[in-house]
Image 1: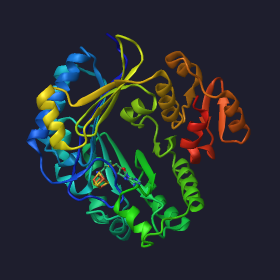
Image 2 (image 1 turned 135 degrees about the vertical axis):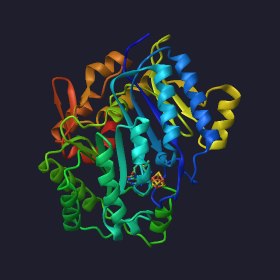
Image 3 (image 1 turned 90 degrees about the vertical axis):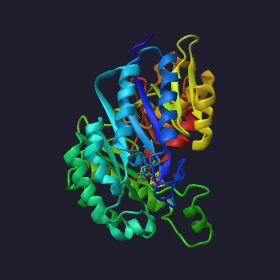
Amino acid sequence: MTDAPLGLYVHWPYCARICPYCDFNVYKARGDDEALFQSLVADLGYWAERLERRSLVSIHFGGGTPSLMTPAQIGELIGKAELMFGFAPLIEIGLEANPNDSDGFEGFRAAGINRLSLGVQSFQDDALVALGRDHDGAAAHRSHELARKNFDAVSLDLIYAREGQTLADWEAELTAILSEQPGHVSAYQLTIEPGTAFDRRVARGELIPPGDSLGAELYTLTQTLCADAGMTGYEISNHCREGQSSRHNRLYWEGADWIGIGPGAHGRMGNFRSGGRVASTTVLKPAAYIEQVTRTGCGSDIETLSALDEARERILMGLRISDGLDIDRITALTGHSIDLEEAGRLERQGLIGIDDRIVRLTPDGRLYADGIAQLLCP
Ligand SMILES: C[S@@+](CC[C@H](N)C(=O)[O-])C[C@H]1O[C@@H](n2cnc3c(N)ncnc32)[C@H](O)[C@@H]1O
Ligand code: SF4
């Protein structure tokens, strides 16, 4: 038995339309897929038995578009999770929502959702058309208003570094958004993911995203504008007002435990019998996930991570947050440390700071987080 924090991630893989930049595990369908829903409930039951009674500090409905689930399904899953695990005080229960689903917000709140991540991406019609979104600026504004009315905590997902976007454009756009005083903003630089429609357009020369140097300037501008608006950049892409950071996402970055259910979901947790850490992975296709849960009672394949893989993952994730990476904790948990010689070099280059055995990326270092993590890995 342990009282270490435990979260639950629920992946709902359906979307009304597939966006041309997205490489998440998504399938085009509207609808509430009752068979998939029942498999989620059964899979949750598997984990409840395996983990005995550990209370949940957070639940996150991600996707895909979980705002396509019905409020009744969301409420039922939350109710079952409470019965099976119990809830820690002030549990965060978050849902990723598309602006077109704002009619459901009241129902989602009544079902138990207390934090909404709203995928507005932009409030500008032309940007939304370029991103291939199925909502417009008016829907983005309306849904933001409704979200604020219904939920204690609201986060806005934004995408910048879009084709043709200048520093002045983004400054004006983000300044207008920040003037509405959002509590939390996730601002993502557009990534051209392999295999997406945007990737094919780039290959054909039909889409020219900003180059690395403009991308870096746009990133730095984002940090400055958010900080000037009183928001802390507590993670590379995430900014919040005091006390409004995402409790669930912190579990990932801090290397805590979470269960993952639904097609393509990942989970991580301590192996309390033999030590170390286990990784759970579910199959990607909804039909295959349903079939596996029906046949075995569990949607996941579970493997024990090697101590080295665990250390590498902890370094990669821990570097992302402004709290930084505790070198001694990594060693205590895995027996490995960071490459201290490399760390010294990176510190002299101004890319990281090391203070009291905590490694933090500097503002310049934040631009190269993944590369730095690789250099620091044992
Ligand atoms: C998994 S999506 C789900 C949210 C919801 N379905 C939506 O699109 O509004 C979470 C967020 O990832 C971001 N995202 C997805 N693909 C991206 C890409 N290629 N580049 C930058 N951000 C991306 C978007 O901001 C999106 O809101
Ligand atoms: S960005 Fe959101 S709505 Fe678009 S395909 Fe990806 S998960 Fe679905």
